[in-house]
Image 1: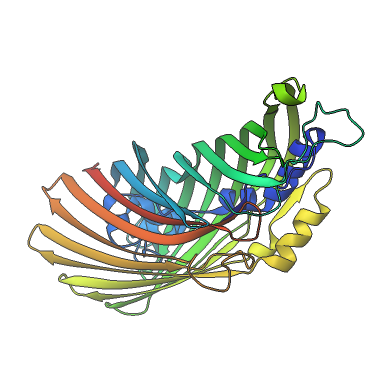
Image 2: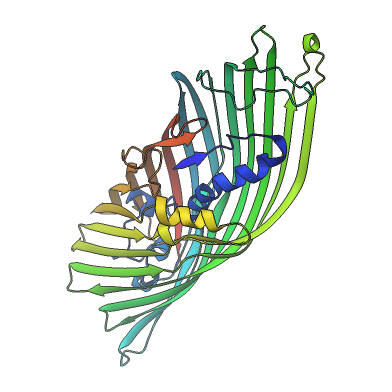
Length: 451
């Protein structure tokens, strides 16, 4: 994931427009990401449930999975995320840690048995809330790149020959983000002759995103006078969208299951962004320059966005009642992501030219020992951006997962642990001049009630 953090701003009255244009592509990727939140069993197996089903969270991969459940059930999951970010900027390193706790999943499957004479032997209704991506983070960076400053003149300097502050002393930036994207899904599914499982979901998506960005640049002139510039941009973004999912699971024999699922693009019909921009410069008494302050906004923008669609092909092998191995392969067409509104031509062209369609691999396994289950998984996902870091594969996400479950009969308790990492590339003055090592771990706990 790469993000240009508002930065080659020439003059105050263009800063907001320029910043938004440069970050819309990254914002679109942020809306499209799915961090595989779900039940603890689902997370412990790295979300590889496309050909398995039965678990409530499986419907987020393949809606046919609901009808695999013979009995009705309800699950609720608590999740704690711990993220460690290490920023690197021209040799200066800083480390930040963030913790986030909430209800990441809640939903159920209502399973109904058909008539014995009917070839459609079972039907299911499903509903599920899940967290897709949470944005609660903070990081900062500081140092000196010894490059030409962004701000080399004081905006209150009205002389013909303005004082030039061309000697960089320090650059600093920090970013606070809050909010989440989440999905509530309702679905129907059915099984034909206990071999072909089919299903469909209607998915309702919600967006809440808050961003507080501060950029600080300190420069000197030839006589040692200091220009201290601070630019703070705050934005609040909300939106709602919907998507459709279709899928099937085919039971080739008692051991082998194959699955295929399609999720349409998410159509965000109305995204509302409220933003404000504040630029300040210190007063310099020796040059008879008063402090400068320019507060612009609030600005209110409305636009629409279409996320990439998703295709998932799956396979699972069941080792009787002992265990299983499951694999999901997911393809996403990021080049077809698209904003709609005024002034998005360059943004959409950038999706087509500088972003790639991605591949993701999820592998999960589970082994049962009486009432106890032991689980593990691995996941790998390519990053769509072909600009900074895009050809190094360092920004691709790699991780593993582990978990345990115990069946008490009517109640099942599951625990899951997920860990993944990647390097994020940001651009301040030059492409990719900020590197952020992201190490994230999650612990989840799920209670499933048989109905």
